[in-house]
Length: 181
Image (tube, rainbow, N blue to C red; front, top):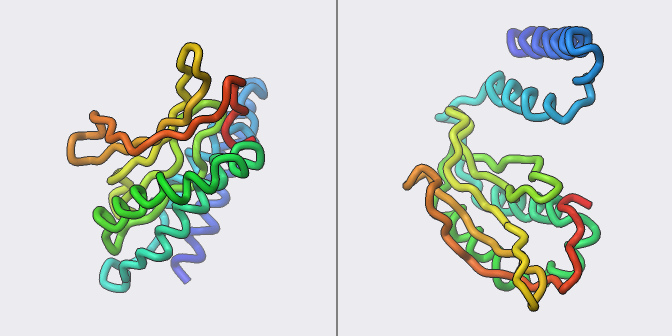
């Protein structure tokens, strides 16, 4: 009962806040603006009521969600061309790191970055909302060679400072499409 009331109140607050910002910014930031996706995702994570003693580590679910976010990131233009190599050469490393770092309170982030942003998915702690592992890909242009997708990850062990390289997949000499396209 309390959870339903909190969810109703949360929904009302979200709508009110979005409308207020739209009015104050003279419509520059509308309720459908991209900024609200990240704001509301954080709020929803904070209102989630799950008890640590009821959680069970489900590595298979985390790996499936990570694979799904990879597909979303690559989109329908990039995914068909790199999927086979990604599954064989790159994703096993991400899988290994998820298995290494995941706990019962871990979750996989949704909404990988678009355009030319690096984020594929993050493994984070649901209780603290702190990232544990960040899986990224970067587009790299090499003179006379063309474009490569270079895959790497960061961990909380060094405050995400060091790139841990995994591998790369060649695209072509033509500029690749933006992520999520």
